[in-house]
Amino acid sequence: MNRWSSRLTGAATAVALTGALTAGTLPGGTAATTGQLHDYLVFYTTGAQNRAIAAIKAGGGTALSTETKLGYVIARGPGPRFIENLSTSDAIAGVSSDREIGSVTAYPGTTATDRAAAPDARGISTPAEEPLAGRQWDMKMIGATTDGSYATAPGNKKVLVGIIDTGIDGKHPDIAPNFNRALSRNFVTDMPKDSKGNTFDGPCEFKNCKDPVDWDDDGHGTHVASTIGSPINGLGIAGVAPNVSLVNLRAGQDSGVFFLKPSLDALTYAADAGINVVNMSYYVDPWLFNCTANPADSKAEQLEQRGVITGMQRALDYARAHGVTLISALGNGMTDLGKPTVDALSPDYPAGSARVRKIDNSCLNVPAESNGVISVSALGRSGRKAYYSDYGTEQTDLSAPGGDEYDGPGKPDVTRTILAAAPEHVLRTRGLIGADGQPTTPSVVRDCHNGTCAYYQYLAGTSMAAPHATGVAAILISRFGTPGKNGLTMPPADVERLLYATATKKSCPTPHTYTYSLAGQKISQTCENGTPRNGFYGQGIVNAARAATVAP
Picture 1 (tube, one colour):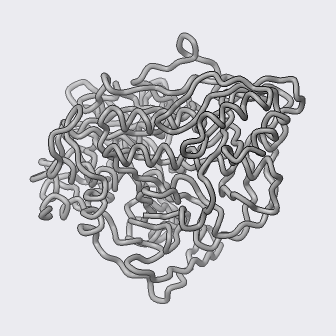
Picture 2 (spheres, rainbow, N blue to C red):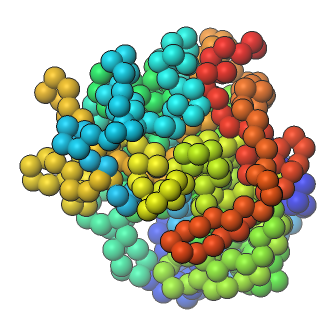
């Protein structure tokens, strides 16, 4: 578990701007004129709600409503002067714009074929397995197989797994049997254009730009959900925990980015609805690293980053206190998160705002480095850390298969990445399926059974690693959970303890500096030992088979 609180001192307060900014915004997120009114999330210190409201009024703003669960006021005020006035109050410590705060952490496959048309010699399944099980090297690595965890602990429908992502294709034939439509929610509204008038989510497909709860226009969330809990039904693949319930907690836009308010809403809802574990395969933008007092940043930019850290931490704390185990992807920056030196990607919204700035270990990748979150690095087929995966002794809690197309002899091979369900309409839109229904690229696989066909896609990333850990957590909750709201409940601390206890220990490579060969380039990364973890593998590789048999 990563404890950012040991590196962040002072009162935990912030302000976050909500709603899309109009044209004429500065890179840091403040309006170019003082006459424009914007809505903000004003986080107040403990016991300071009334003083925060007074500060809002004194600054020329209006308090619209209060959210006491996370300790913030929704306020409306006139641009940067209002923000500066708020920053002088000791009840308020930051201002964070609610534009893009998240990017999914996955790489698209570059090379998968129709099973009937071009069977993979390494994709041979036994009669007792799902048809595409032979392609699931990831499940074999963690013991999620017919002679492993599936035999004794496939999960329980009473276990509610929340996927905070871009949505879930709840009608996908290999997801629908486990999809909990009643509890699923969509916390976002599609935005056809961004603040500069550029295409963002694209045209709205549904009334009021609000997608239904069983829809995913990106495919990322569907892939994550499938890895966690695709059922054993004679079609395609099976997930880590094929009997659990999958709940869509959509917080990501169609474009694959996330805004602060939907993320807060998703975590708060998860807590109140009795969700047992959530998967968060995204990181918080517009700052890849959020620094509270970086001299390279303006005062407004510092306040913005404090807002992201504080707002998310409060939501995470609320969820964990209500029995939600929190699991996150670590990130794909090939970076030792304990020793970051440069951030050349921030702020990444709107486009063209990024600049090179020096950073240090006080700057946080959120939610991977937030307190109470179990963060997962990605592994390739051989068990080595994937070349793209972030790492660090303070940050890596567990490791799991995420795929690495370079992990093996010869040319990069997409079958070394992770295969999981994909929405058919997304694949068609991207030209990955032809008019005849056949895949046009080896990154897509079709499987048919009794007249029903479904599609699957190879992807790689720490986004793919985290759901393996989430699935193992669901197995543990299925076994040891007690009756609770809408199903079972289990203290997150107990889930975490058993995840670590059942993980397969793996040491740093010898020598500790490992050199990857990528398309003619050499990239070196160093694994350091810590107690009880190391920087590449954390406390070990998640193990579904051990989770299925461990004593409480």
